[in-house]
Length: 334
Image (cartoon, rainbow, N blue to C red):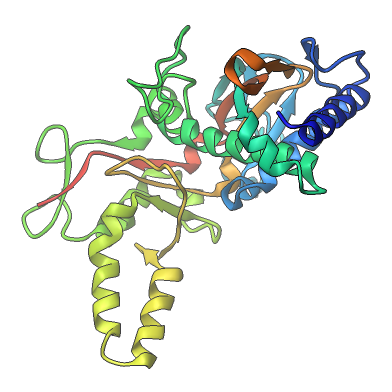
């Protein structure tokens, strides 16, 4: 590490110790409330998808979904000369349980990289931003691919972080299997094509909406999250049609940018599962983070020519209203 890099990095350590009210950031510490919230905000702001969902701080490590949802209509009328009015509990729905599990977000920065960044005045911001961005991407990857929470994870065997925590889709499979369609006429797959379960992907989405509770099926904020590979044929047709003229090419670009499936807007997100479709609102997806559950330890490791940032957070992935989600997976074209 160069001299100017050491000066910049020592300044970073001093700043982290100051904002967390600890003697040294090179000893393991609990991240204080204010910097913890600032980090959570930075993680959320680092990705457009994360900006649209909920990241919620919870005091308890375990519990049930906490956002108040209205499970069906509340309007009614009662003949009070014969019966008493009976208010409906708007939160009376099948709740998605949560259990915030310790998740390590450990990052190593080679001296060579820090040397390259040290010449910039925003050295500390660059370092913090890179950490927040990577943690945000990891959360999305876990949210859509996580199926278990292993005691010791294996990145080689689970490159999409499948064993770090149970994500949103796994919660649907376990808590609300009636909201999942994973096979059709052929066991183990839902087929699309001339001889398939559905002729088109649009038809599949249009039908899958029926898995939502009736009062949610015509919500204006419904979106469809879909495997990008499944969209290839639909988008390829729009691109090829647009090749005839500039005007049509621009129109084709709008078709892709503002695409719809089954009359629902497409929400393009990274790391969504292959052969899958999910219908919901983005406000129905949450990440719960336990208050006071983030630990950190910054460590210079000269034997590896790097600086390590050991961080951990207690968190989980939650579907707020299980009646407001439908999942179709194992989709194959025939």
